[in-house]
Length: 360
Image (cartoon, rainbow, N blue to C red):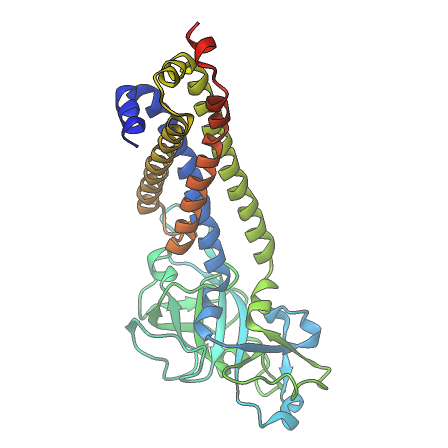
């Protein structure tokens, strides 16, 4: 380790370039990791809030909650099931006065109608709880990005009704859409189904398994909550795409490090030959090269993480960027391990050095 560190200090420019390349690759990997996790949360964070174990949709919906309508008479013989019904509705609202004249003045939202104090009921962080129909609690995105405030009236495109904003909750989203929380009656009236049999979009189940109870219900389809999340539009494809990109970048980083270390090793063959002639073992020389790679990989990945944190601080709120320190930790370890593996390519060259030939 001492020899490895001394050489890095002595040849600052040479090794600094390698560290810079690693830092830039690490920056790209960590930034993509943050985007992947942020987009994943933008798809599912509202569902995670429910803490449900299972979810029931209508069988015709093909796993899409926005297309699901559950009729009351389908539930007559399953009254023993302890469930909570939620109603999901996609809306388009007018934004507040735009700062730029040509800026889009419409906003796509998802309204979740839920039962009072139920699983889908959000925690009110600012304002008050809903006390009557057509009042809504909004996620913080509407405040931070679109400038809405408590007491504002939300005008809906294509509907006569308006919504009163009475509170804000955390930054939950569903399928990359900001959320409004309201009552079941509000969602039903906005859908034009007031008094109709179709009251719920989904039934949330917690702390029980209702597989047997719903086994013969052809018009209802039961999903484990994780399976339901995987069927969200674009969620699985998006995660696979980002995962493949991140894995390839880590492998590329390992190859780049391996090439740099190999070139440096070839340039120092005469020096290594002299060291061998003095009785220094191949293991000692090879371990110094591996330590050099480890030091550069650690410094490079830490610098890449620092660049990512600085970038995240200045990103606009509209960008779905979020940190998962567990995911970042795994990515850092993989980058360092693969970089060291790339550096091991040079050890074989060191072992094969003949002192007499290297000196001559």
